[in-house]
Length: 446
Image (cartoon, rainbow, N blue to C red; front, side):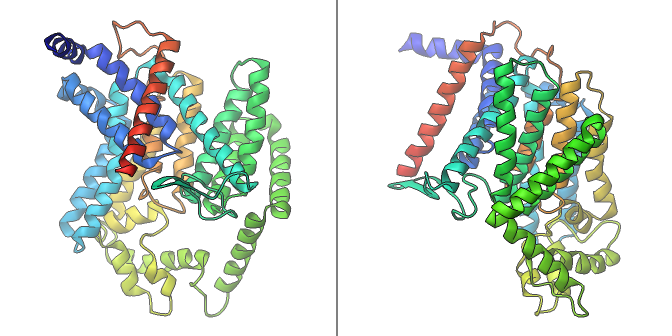
């Protein structure tokens, strides 16, 4: 017993081994991003514990804060806290501070990330999306149930068979699929891989694209289109015309063969039509979002510089909106992260938030593939949050993970004296997934 305790103590004092396991957990976290928000949160808690046990916390935090992008996330978090000083709705303000805290995950991820784990983290996320996609198609074709529950254990539950988004909210799932398509396009056309692997990734591109249009998230449709436009105009100019023709075919095919996409298009048309009447109808999904802008303008005029406070933005909009606009009065947030920051923290807060994008844009990353991913994950977040917010534990963690592995280079070493073996690390990662997954199932049974 004494020898076991002594061995454990020695193991916990080995900073390199702890850093190795932290990197393994980062891979697990990336894999779980599109699959389980609950298990993902548990994994992060263990990462924090190991980070503290490893020691020199202040030293590592200071080193991470040398990075301008990491500091930019800290600044917006501080701004949300400062905005509590003039908010009236303290409970709501604390909710939004809690939501924005996920941006601070970048500090830990960046501090521990080893360059040899970059490709492992990216591949883990893609593999997680592959599992999500297989599940989604299984539901779509009636092979798998829309709700998989065994006893008291709930594995997943989608909105319906007409909207097969198994693990994520369909808004987030569509955006995640759009980003995955971009990652796969880059790996297929910009990187050197075995011919068979390229064929597989090409098929994955097609199926992931199709998957976007059989789910019900309009945010995913728009994000996908905007990302493809940026890709065609700035990276594949010679093929731009062909890409736009291909996307046109995709949209026409989706309109004719995907009932949910067809319905969403018609809903959007009807909503737009009702908005241009003499008495605009804000009681539709799109109409309510438009109404938010309409009433937000009145709110911003009163407090343009510092905003209304971290927790008061929707209260002020509800005060402006008449009872007849019942959908607006039922909304919990502004459905636009940029607008939300402007309302809460004013022009100053919006500049602090936009500083994140500026710091990412000007960051000098010598490895072109990592620069590409850094830019496109940031565009994905920007486009996605034009129609939603950071309040559901997905967008900010996704952003933090991909920035952590693209703000460094592959020659960066946080693990110095442990020889890495890819097969051994893969086995460790599989064991970690099994352990955390099993613990989650056990927790549901208890």
